[in-house]
Image (cartoon, rainbow, N blue to C red; front, side, top):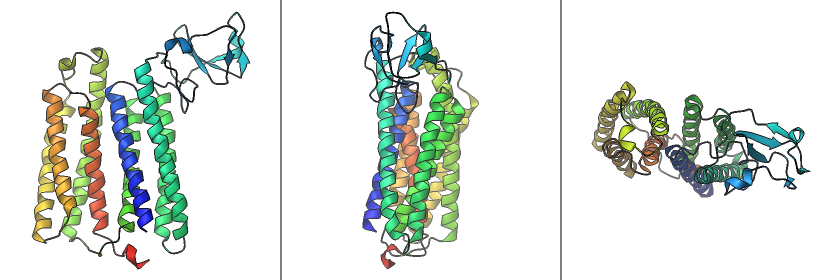
Length: 341
């Protein structure tokens, strides 16, 4: 079971790296750096210069390779060698969206994000294959590992949908929620495979933790709405005039900011009730520290005009808190112990 625990922990760490990379993608406006999926401009390794996407005579093109022509994307229908003149019949216009810009930095930021996502898929696949040895003795491990594999495949499809939709807010939100669902599944495996003495949390503490998780999910969803507003402001002010990004900020932001007090109060109650029953756990200290850092990162973003990486770090801390609270709840509500296997 130790290997299951280690494989699961590696998968969780990589998922958080994907979340951080995704935050950087959004912060830099790189979401459409690769306008197609799963390749990038039809390449396994994306271009580094705009000239690579210009139509070229006497050139060997591969199927699905993309060019930018008259501010439109065209992809090669089949492998062929171009002649001196452009032959429309060899190309088909890319119609899933009308985004046809190339920015080498955006392209490679998005490409690295996808590479980390691919590594996540590989790690979850390895976890599932290894879990098959427990199919007879501990079916829940195999079942949850299979669910995690389905979740990562669905997440990959959602990634394609996000790109095809040209980054609509609804698809980005669903993509984020699916990442949290994947984390819940992986944290469940982590809790089951951790060899600890079984402990049941008092019902009132378990309920408070469930309430805290629900509050954090609401906070994350309202945060995505605030993020959508900031994305629009970033485009309007060309990503440079940061002091103008929060001009005419919506009421959702005010709710998002004030709602953090509900999270602080709920987690303070959890902390003091756990101290009262003298439960020794470093997790509860870690969670409360992260809540403090989360509030601090929000203050820094608002008053210091979104320093570089502040937004992805804010998102990362939020998902860390949700994941660790779910893990804490699962870990101390186990009715069986991994060491019995």
